[in-house]
Image (cartoon, rainbow over all chains, first blue to last red; front, side, top):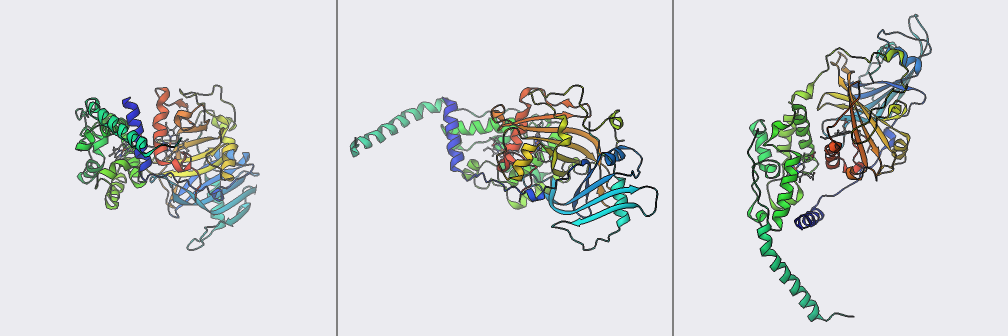
Length: 152
Length: 316
């Protein structure tokens, strides 16, 4: 009886209050699907306010699991960069927002300077070229240098 | 048959009569709010505790002080219910019952509950003018949580790799699949799923990647919510290494994976989502009793009801 009274009252008060359940609108355009490659690691870029995900094929993943940095012929990478945004439901987390850029790398030959590699850069919707000095070799090194995140 | 005005009037009268007759004895059944002793009150700067005392203590402390109308039945039933539920969720008078990490998480949750207008409860605000937290007070709370130790936590420990990692293909089957105490299993094939979210959870010094299976991924792609049964997510969590000179932060040690699986019948008690968490490289199932998942849904329900209780979905 008491339970019934309090539940009815709670329900009445809840309905009477201005609490509304508004639904969020999904934005699949922020997703980026990398086919035939696996995640290597995520990275946070605090200077640019970006967040990144590096993918690679099996050769690249194996190389990234090795503790020594090395270029392995046949390694293919994709580095997806998003602008960070505050997670809508939680102040305390930043997540991927709009796509900033997509970089691809295919290592063909090893030990030559400059690197023998195909490198591609595609600006995303929210890319800004302002005050970013772009150095192709440096981007290639950055991609190859990342170690795989540990997973059980 | 059409009712004559007089029968309708007599009906109303008899209802009022019944209400009055019920009202008086109801007072004897009216719950009395008891304030248990304060074991260990939250310690925080005075500007912070002032806000909590003013807006939250009536339901989240052992110093509840219901107004006179809150002591009269039937309102008293609702008040007592809110107090017992509120205290069970978080109690500023028994703050040290929570481990320090949980205390910090609760403080961030508090900021979010206020920011989203979920707390104090609306029914309470309507009757207690001045209990709503002002924008400037919320700013004080935000500033405070940003000074907590977890906010700048860096994982400086040597990175531990599973012994067999280098020699094992990423999707090899585990010899024994761990299962959570509530029956939700670990899904080892998540490494082949698609990624829906990459995060910097700076409140506790971790970074995360959320994988979704095809059912979940396709639902997001076609903007379908609530998510269909069979939707699954796995969230992998790492510590954060020291930021390098270019501002880059890399994942440190692996901490845990957390799982949500949709089965609206099986997990009806938790809004249709089955929850699980597996700790460390050994994937030790988290939770002492099968209802550990109530603490999971309580926070997800409060703060992410507009996206089917999922935080990590891409939204406008």
